Amino acid sequence: LTMPGMLSAAIKACPVFGGKLKSFDADKIKAMPGVRHVLKVGDNAVAVVATGWWQAKTALDKLPITWDEGPNAKVSSASIADFLKEGLTAKDVIVAAKKGDVAAAAKAGKTIEATYDTPFLHHVTMEPMNCTAKVTADRCEVWVPTQNGEAALAAAVKASGLPIDKCEVYKLHLGGGFGRRGAFQDYVAQAVLLAKQLPGMPVKLVWSREEDMAHGFYRPITMCKLTGSLDKDGNLAGLHMRLSGMSILHQHFSHRLSGGMDRLFFQGLLGDELGYDIPNLLVDHALRQTHVPVGFWRGVNHNQNAVYKECFLDELAHLAGKDPVDFRRKLLAKAPKHLAVLEAAVK
Image 1 (tube, rainbow, N blue to C red):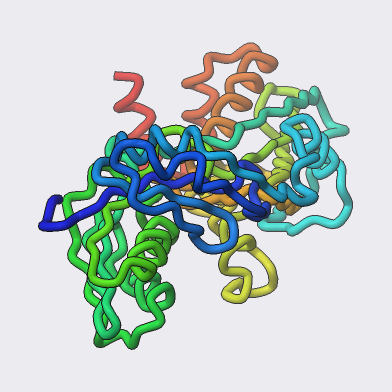
Image 2: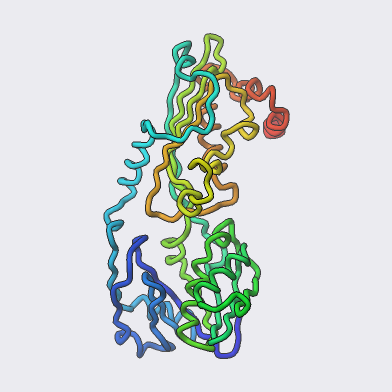
């Protein structure tokens, strides 16, 4: 997208989620080629506006910036992992499904236990996160690749401070979304906040890949401890799935949850979605929220839950000394659609 007088912007936010921008020294870069402005964006980011994006990015890399990283600066991958491990044995949990008695089933035959985990994962959209905005005293216009035009409009209204009938969003080709350009329109808000400081000037904000990787809404980090029991004939008698980790809905939309349960977290593990007929079943969740923002994906929680469930079924089949396909066929006898998928995969 190009238009007369357009300027390009590169942005950098605090490297720690929840941190703030303390200061920057614009004098150190204002004489660099193409640089027109160095502007604060919200309370946690700074942007360089230039005649070209590479000029803006080159200057931004040389800009002296001081951050207030806040209490989350001490959080690490190791401390988050320990936090989730605590949830695997926690007593305060959300029970999503309970059928029969898994404890009694565990005493009847062979038992196996395994723990799996999936990390935070980035969307890595094919086209970098970007948005162009033009703001005047009585109008805000936004050109943006978005999966959610209404959310983009809401972000433009809030950032511009103008009434909704004075704001307009023009949707462009997406360039890859996968959920990242859906519910959360942070990049739209940033572009509007920038353009608001340069009235009448169209400003094209493009995130660098480094900025994108560091400031996304990631797949939730989770762990799953599974305990399975076989009867004397090697059939699956009981299964306990304990999930520990982050909930997208609890982080962003907790006011919409009934009874505190995020059914999205249990995708693929309940009722008809599960498919497998297990006599004794317990599925529960220890909520472990961190400061890292999480967001929707294609498949959302199906992605990791399918890995946990199917890998463990292979382990159970191995313990039973049975072919893993035959082991599943028996469990899917009452779920013809699931069984048809299995047979198609085998074929």
